[in-house]
Image (cartoon, rainbow, N blue to C red):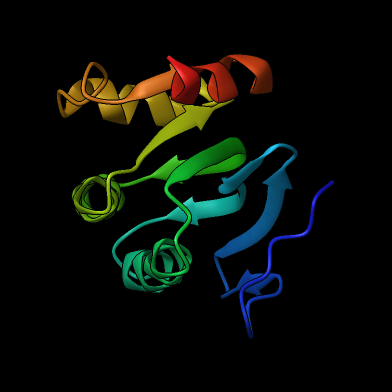
Length: 131
């Protein structure tokens, strides 16, 4: 695991969501954001603020590991859309990894399943940035 250096950013969490960062060997501007918990109306601003900080430190390729993300509300999807716009302005992008079916249903119901890249393996997620 490669360390991601962002001052005052360790294992960030509130009552409902924990974020852990991991670097990707050979890709300095890429990091994996491990999400554990859920994103809804009550914590979407916490989530968006933390990810915006990562983007501000010039990480332009984010992999959201959703293996332990149990739920995302429509407000949470809105947070992802806002973050996608912000990272695109910096010339970057993000992909989703290991999205649970319950979370994927929300993306599908809201019509965003084709707007983002969803992958099942880390190699596939990394390859999405190299194509």
